[in-house]
Image 1 (tube, one colour):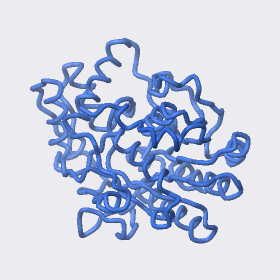
Image 2 (cartoon, one colour; image 1 turned 135 degrees about the vertical axis):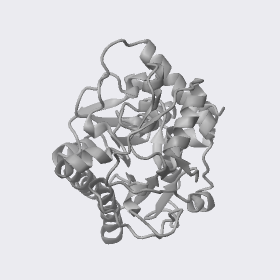
Image 3 (cartoon, helix red, strand yellow; image 1 turned 60 degrees about the vertical axis):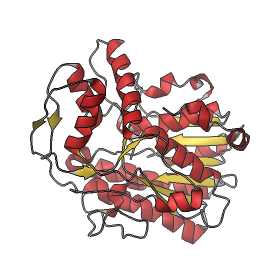
Image 4 (cartoon, one colour; image 1 turned 180 degrees about the horizontal axis):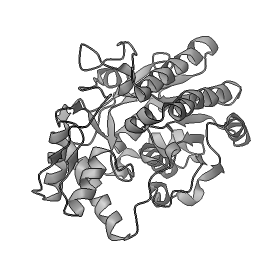
Length: 349
């Protein structure tokens, strides 16, 4: 099992020490994990807080007391602009989004407002700041839409044709526009389905399955169980983001999009099997076959990140699932209260 301290090398500490970093979506799964790494590396981290989410994993970050919290969200341009300038931000991780496809299908307008105009707000504020030197923007594998050839590579077209997918295609294109027109130092990341400690979006298959098994209930499958995804442990994703940021002074890196993935091809039933194995459960899933407006098969190639950045995932699915299950067991042990849902601006792609 990899140890977090193994990734906090002297070279990495020297790079991040006292560097001013702004993270959107810091209370969500990916954002809180990036905060955890960067605070351990002595970066000066600033996050936005729209809603108070008492169960966010951000509060578990050992150095949380040193994180600067600004009230507001990135849908408000003035808040973003003030934050970037007041705190002399040098590096931005824009990972905040409305990232749940069924919510986007029900409520496309708020999704487009958050994911599209929110991204414009962040990039425009960065463009007007003389101090910002690197911006990481979270797109998604969903930005590719349905493609005839898998796995996706970075040169595939962006053709999302459902609300969430389209919002991420737009996010990607907007970042590219700011790089090509204004030379803003931007990189884009496209990740698979993230999982890990602290994901409080119970509609996602892994946390929902863990919750059902803990309560001795059969896991539910909204699709027919055959949908294929690339399930990606959140610590690997966070380290991928950090690695890209560390290399953005290189001309072959800045302005580029990078897939970050394991390259695995798990069906929903496969991943429920991994959860069940990690929990020692024999409960059989119930297939609802209700999924609509979702891409059936999605997998990513991260060969470009391996070749240019020498990045590779460090966790196997067994290792990632073991750590994830352990976190949820503690979560349910220490709280008998009703589950508090994550706020929409803390969700991530």
